[in-house]
Length: 79
Image 1 (tube, rainbow, N blue to C red):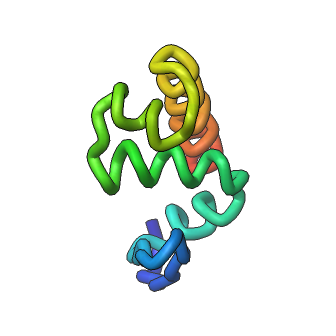
Image 2 (cartoon, helix red, strand yellow):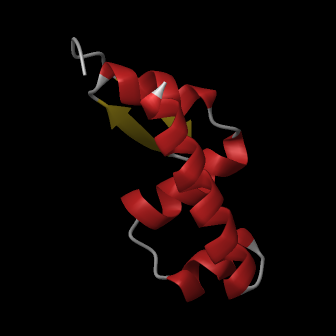
């Protein structure tokens, strides 16, 4: 994945540091809502029910948003 590139994404009072250049570029190309759902699910390790509460949506809607965001990130990484 190329040279290491450190980038910080500000989310509330927390920072997410990405140490892979291609991942950092793909992350920045996601919409803020996509970054939010991925950060909550993957970085914060929230289960679906808590993810839904954090996003203010149903569990089904949260699961769909997460699936779509993961799919888009995978597609961006494949480019």
